[in-house]
Image 1 (spheres, helix red, strand yellow):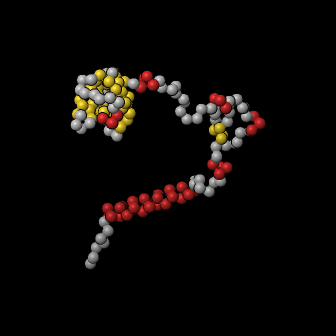
Image 2 (spheres, rainbow, N blue to C red):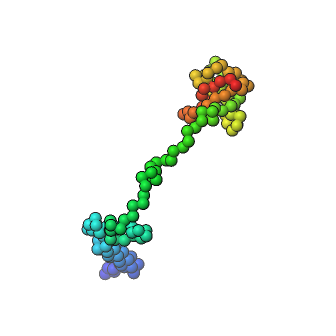
Image 3 (cartoon, rainbow, N blue to C red):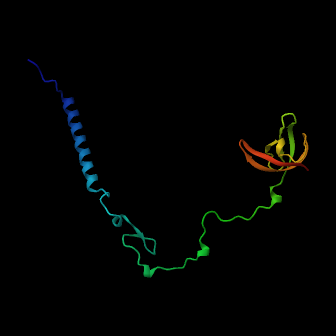
Amino acid sequence: MGSSQETFSKKEKEKKRLKKKQDKEQKKEERKANSDKGKSLDEMLAYVDADGNITSTPPNPTQRKNNIKVEDIQIGVSRQAPIDPKDLIRKGKVTFFNESKGYGFIKDLESQESLFVHINSMASNIKENDKVTFETEMGPKGMNAIKVKLA
């Protein structure tokens, strides 16, 4: 005589699995019933009234206030004052320069920043410990000194 292979815990697990499946089906039906997919564009639009409240009715064009001036509208970034060319020129001291390889480094006197300089961006010949004036530009590995001249 064979006994049933189903134990109490197996029955409970099966009940939980069926309950979970029923809950999932019920949630699926609720989502279908409450779905926004069938709505038209007019039903989905929301409007803002003069007080800033959201409403479902469009505003009345006859009550619109036209107090916006075209001159007040700014598109993009506000304009900056043109930079004076004298402000771009910086002063520094040559800390290292290798003439055979054609490059070196200049230490900015204001920010104490070390800037790379190449022989192609020099207006005059320089050597170590010379005081120089220069401008800066962004290079592939950081800031570079350009238009280097003896001070």
